[in-house]
Image (cartoon, rainbow, N blue to C red; front, top):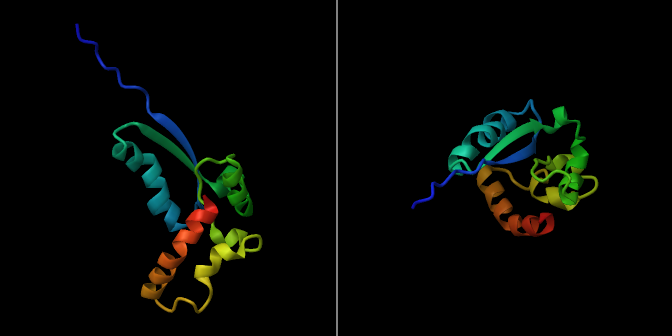
Length: 119
């Protein structure tokens, strides 16, 4: 006798995204979490997203909320916590990256530090 495999309901993720008025949110974040994730995960994951400025989360607090696990998935604007963590925005120093090619090189060099520090 064969047992039918019943697909389980997708795991529902709640995301706090970036600023609602930015094209990054409208063109990248919102479509990925609400449409692409379910398709790419084969239906295992589903998500709903709200921009942090509509969720009542102060921008400068987002990093701390992510670190504490209060917000499991979210977007933190690096510029909003520069005063507390200036080292995180070092790759974006004025004049450091005069063109996109240099910016990519700078980011590639700085990425291991950021990954370790923000983990």
